[in-house]
Length: 300
Image 1: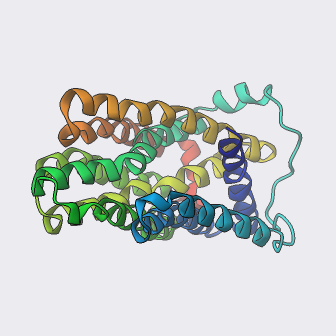
Image 2: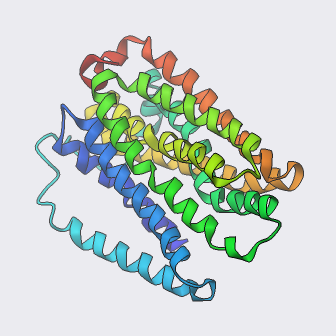
């Protein structure tokens, strides 16, 4: 629990620092930050592929060393940036004001749709690939490490998605890019079951597209809230958004294996498409609200 709490304490302050250094290209800046988070989340799977299963402590030790190095690197950041908003003390009394803002609430609903899918997909991708390979090969021991390598590639590909999402959201608008990303990732969630048990030459490309699109929109919800929320409550609004998202993802992480026990791993991932469907509806609703002119320099 302490590890989880510490991880949660990294993300919102990191986004606020990034937002304080950029105004015109804030989506790209936060997208780069989330891309780094995504690549870091993928690396333990690469280590797991490289070492024997019995040496699982090596995976934890290297992940811990990387976290320590990241913590030291943050000390090199001189201050919160020239565009940082004032940071009043956190107060739960600010929550109703944030949640009562219609535009911010729609951005949060889009984020919740995204989070319904993201971490459950990341968490259970190795199990899905392992079940698919078992169905294809009948238990060939030569494929035992394959799920870890595939999961590294799928999760790690999201770093490219974050960069692309940030770059084009600043140009084309946050609501458009997030809606397209969620539509594509939801389509992947629905379609991977049809390719279950097929060669990775067939299944792999769809998984990579899913890995790119499932997180391409992630930073844009945070950027949107940083632009829509009252200036003196940006940090609190980002923290509240993150708390709601991670609370929801705890549920879907447990939901997916429950669904797999009943309908099998083949079609279990289709459950995740519900989130993007709701998220697209929320972001399109936000697109047509007058407050959306504050997004991405007026590009909505």
